[in-house]
Length: 226
Length: 414
Ligand SMILES: Nc1ncnc2c1ncn2[C@@H]1O[C@H](COP(=O)(O)OP(=O)(O)OP(=O)(O)O)[C@@H](O)[C@H]1O
Ligand SMILES: [Mg+2]
Image 1 (tube, rainbow over the protein chains, first blue to last red):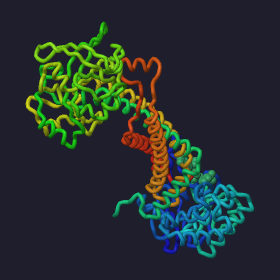
Image 2: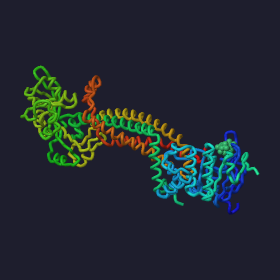
Image 3: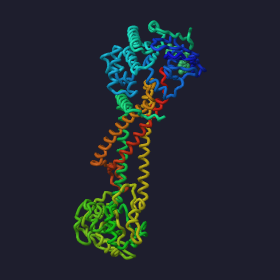
Image 4: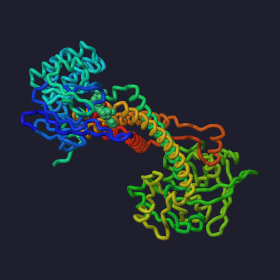
């Protein structure tokens, strides 16, 4: 691994056991991502994007191989340490079901900070600031059900950034959005990426996202294409 | 390494409580229905048990309380023949000491036997009981007077209402009594009816004749003797038996202390058989409610599976997430239990003020067996709390399902 790389994936293999026998979803992927990158894993459905992102985020184990984030080998951490690592160092944006339905927008953004034990004032200030950065000023006390899909995704982006993580992982964040919302979300993420230097790694097969990414990792049948 | 705590920080507890409250409000109708099911089950259980235990208490106090006594001190040979010949010699000093025991509410010496009463061509068998002046003064007897008066000269008798009706006598009329006396003597006397008595139990009303202790001793020839001393302890619960304790503190030569439970095993058996029936009904109720709650909990767990996964992915500890769900269910069950206790208590108090009176054949059958056909409830708070505890535990047991879901859900998002 190179020292300055924020993310280093080495020879990661993930095999699922299914009733039809083992399925190799990721077959020996190695990649590096520099700090401040705006990158995307791209490829057709079923090529292993989600599997790889889940492994990088420590949500799922790998069959073999190693993953370093910011100098920590997360594939070597205990379950508890992985949870703590996720809490402090990684932000997630999923395709859907990102938000806690019973918390309003700012509380959702503050959720991670609350888990970290931040005081209410600090949480609220930062949440309001982030909501304004994603263009949701005035929507702070709306519950997720009162927000559009695009607005919900923007709340999720704000939340992913709330704890100033080293890396934000976003699995098809625009899959449920129309082009206008997609552009807006991408603008926001790009701006945060440039202003705050947060590193983003998406998975997508959405050409609108692919066009905006700085670095592309094409994936096919669980393998990176040269 | 320190072990993980359920709530590592105060802010975590705050978050858990907030999420729990909001989740309750999220599906308000379901929360209300679940809470209502809990309170209704509890309400029903409280009423059922209060009535059951109340009826037993009523049974015991009518049969035992005023008549044979919760505890009897008698000659060791007196039971079960209850023969006049096995009487005790009066011991006023011992009696005074017994009465001063803080565990003793009252202690009255009596002498009793069987006799035949007749008026003109009508007659009836009676159990005559000689009671002391102190006992006659007690509110228990004072309030039982149906007609006539307690103020009366020597040779007076007070009859159970039904016995007086059977003999067709009114206060002021005289009757002739005959019976077996002390040590083979013949007992005979002429008495004047001084009053009639409500005894709360038709059987007792048909065969009781109350005399003054001295008149009774005179009648039977058992001068200076007591058949037994009727003791009412302070603790009178069905499952309390203070007789051994009292006997040890107040020994009397040749006598022993017998509780009603020992003297009347059939009464205990009746109660136990009946209480088992009640328990079976409640058991079925709880099983039904328990499965209902389990169904609700499974639904809740399935609805939240994705949300759980997302929260775990965010870095929420499983323990904290489980704590959140636990608090939610706990709040729900406590709210249900509180309203159930409240409603049950109100109902029990109403039933105490206006006791249920049985009617028709059931009432007749019950009265035939000797019980007044009313259902007075027990006011014991422990009934409410025991059943509240049971239902809260059942609810929390059902919560094991969503808790299991929390621990089994993978943070992998799909
Ligand atoms: N839990 C699982 N058990 C068995 N096979 C799985 C499991 N999850 C994923 N797979 C398989 O692994 C492969 C990669 O799946 P993955 O979800 O990573 O694809 P993806 O690139 O994210 O696709 P999409 O663009 O449709 O989201 C697929 O062939 C899929 O069928
Ligand atoms: Mg996917």
